Length: 238
Image (cartoon, rainbow, N blue to C red):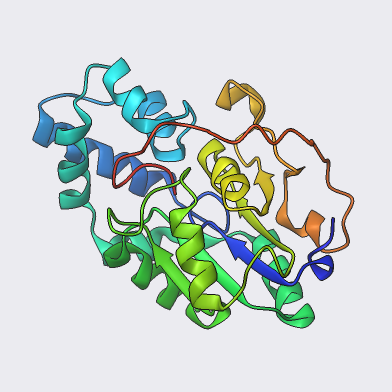
């Protein structure tokens, strides 16, 4: 698979194109812990931030935290300016986006990152102009792994998987399932390693760096079982 083989391009944001420095993540979970009266270990913070355990709602319940209490606290302590300052663009993602710009085709972003957090990140990293459509998931757009937010983006881009070939790249199981549910090829980028994730995420293509997609050569796994995780909360996945 190479991006030049496709008519349109769709990407996830956090954990796929960008990531935040650990110091910021640790600070956020310290503040959330203060509000909830519970400390979060480094491992718990990493699992929840990166969605390593699958559904974050289930992970939270598994450690005795109510998701309905966690997400309001999480969003209340997040500082958009501080998050943007702590966020960096992966070098391999920058190279892939340059190649996407060269080959052309409508390009969109579909993320669970909320708009008040995503916009400053896109502005600071000068990414806004890279995308013809940006969808920050809400209850109105729907949440991955449902196809709805990707379909919202495709409608905004004026594309249809029935008339053109497209793909969606993400770092989580819900990203892969959302792509398949929307009729797109699914690319999974593994940035934390299978050992830390505790599982191998399948996809039409699996890469450890996004620039592997510039000329193809990525690993392929044809297993379109769809479905994926249960409905995430408003901060679940990326």
